[in-house]
Every structure is written in C-alpha cells, then in structure tokens.
Length: 203
Image 1 (cartoon, rainbow, N blue to C red):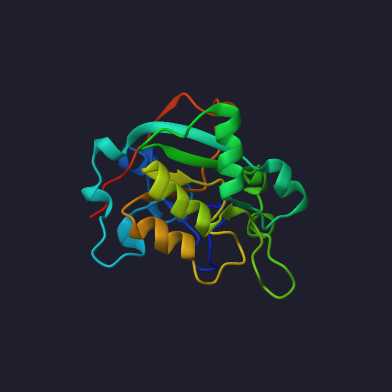
Image 2 (image 1 turned 90 degrees about the vertical axis):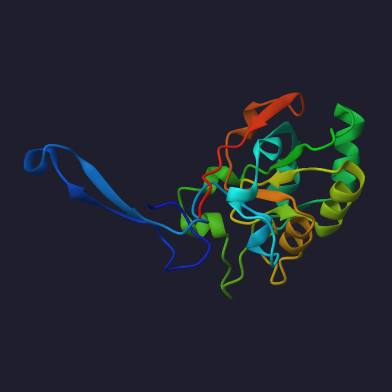
C-alpha cells in the first residue's frame, strides 16, 4: 500500500477482514485504483471508444521485447526522454526493433520506488520530474515499427513535467498499450526476450 501513486489520495489501502482465530481463515480487504503500481494503460484510458482490458487478447500480450537503456542520460537529466535518436542508436547496436514488439525504457528510476517524493521527483513548485518517452519517438515506433506497446520504470509514459500527455494520446490513440511502473528489466537482454503480460481483464 505504500507504493507511490500519481496523485495524493489515490493510495492503496488494506485491512484484515477476517482472522483464523475468529473465523477459521485469513482474508484481507484491499482498495486501490486500477492504475496503481505495475499496470497497463489500455487504449481506452485516453481514447474514447478505445479497447479496454477485456478486449486485449493473447496476440497483444505475448510479444517480443526490447530494452532501451537511457540511464546514462537520466543521471544528469531527470526529465530525459527516449528519442528517435536513441531508437536509431539502439538499432545500430542491437538490430532492428521487431514488428509488434514492446519497447521498454530502462532509466534506473525503479530504484526510487521506495519514496513517493523521490519517485515523483517533485520540485518546489510541485512539478514532477522523471523520465519518459518523447512523442516523436512514439510516432516513429508506431509508424515505422508497428509496435504493440511500450513500458516504463516510472509513474507515467510521458516524462514528469508533461501537462498534455501527448505520449498517452498518440500511443493509445494508435491502439497500442503502455505499461507503467515496471522493474527488473535491466536484467534481460536488449533484445531476444519474449514478454508475457499478465493482464487482469477488469470489467
């Protein structure tokens, strides 16, 4: 329940509902928003009439994955974004991004998840600062590589200072999905991995 959330007041809560001593079994009650912790932004999150989680099938949930590491940029710029140049540089080193793949950003931001203040990167004026994707990179991936989705180790697909959420609008508007608050993807190769997305079909 202490995992950082995007806006104060959306924190998860849990309590013991029944106990073994009193009821013969143990059960907790959880309350949380569907965009808490690691989760998928389905197209319908920003696109009227877009697909929601029950509409997303296995063809979109078992896909090739590539990991684009921008942690060096993030060390000196907390608002860094995955750019077209980063993607072209990735392909020069690791080969073409496969069609229908998931492109995962590794920024190293996952190490801050134990602190809401550090994870949001909030400055004195209340502006968030954390990495994300650049909207031109999203358009390039959708148009030229026909991706299925993206993933980030931060609170949002857009970088922290964004107020227009263009990455969300363009990516989800192209019927792709986004994963937020992922972690440990630095331990998998830059390419050659098959990603299995465990999606709860909320209705």
